[in-house]
Each structure stands twice: as C-alpha cells, then as structure tokens.
Length: 159
Image 1 (cartoon, rainbow, N blue to C red):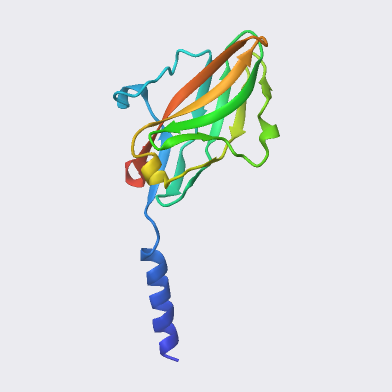
Image 2 (cartoon, rainbow, N blue to C red; image 1 turned 30 degrees about the vertical axis):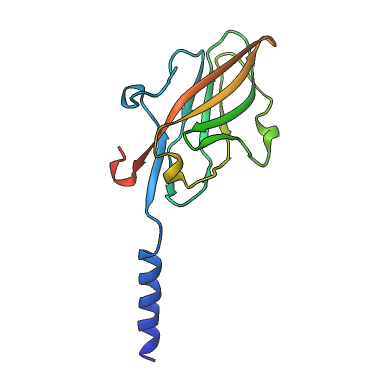
C-alpha cells in the first residue's frame, strides 16, 4: 500500500519536470525588429496576429489573424504564408475554403484561423523574426501583399 503513493508522486514529478518549457509567439513591433523588412502601416490591408503560447518542441503554428480592409473596394484573400530563416510555409488549414478565396468588404474586419506545419520546432523557426504575408487582390486587378513581423518571447516576458 505504501508503494502506491510513492509511485504516484514519482509519476507526477516526471510529468511536471519532463515537459518542454513554453514560449510565446506574438506580433512584433517595427521598432523592436532590427534589420527585418517590415511594411507595417504602409499597406491598406492591416493584419493583427493574436499571441499564442506553445511548447518549444511543437512543429505546428496556428495563429488567429484579424484582417482589416481599409480600402474603398472589397479585397479577396488569395493566400497566407509564413517566411522564416528556416523556410517559407504555406497555410495548410484543413478547411481552406474558410478563407481562400475570402472576400472582405471595405472597412470590415474578418478573423481567420491558419495552420503552418513547420520543418523545425517553433523554438528554432522563431529564433529570428519571421514574416507573415497575406496575399490579396483588389478590384480584380491589383495584387497586393500585407505583412507583419512575428517574434518569440519567453512566457515570463509577457506584458
């Protein structure tokens, strides 16, 4: 009977200390990303990426993205990708019909879910800032790309 509590204590200890540490992946501010190409604020299509908390060993990144159309005409989203030093990843959300092609009316904001299968862990992929790119078409002629920078932070450094 005494071995059961000891075994339970050991199992809980292994589970607690055996887990990967966590990290936060969030949208970066242009001033904190040195040397990265950023056109945030220059595009009439604005992107806001919700922060995610992940284990450092995960190889999936599934942020929630808010897209605001500041143009006077509708836009059609034609694709979303993530560019990092370890590669460029295309959205593989199981239901791409949810957004691609997705029409956003003038002055409207839509929330999108995307999924990226990374070649490496989120820790390695976001070792350096990455760029989230939203491809869109306006007036059935003009092609555009709205982008934002994605950075990592430890769970302790959250605001």
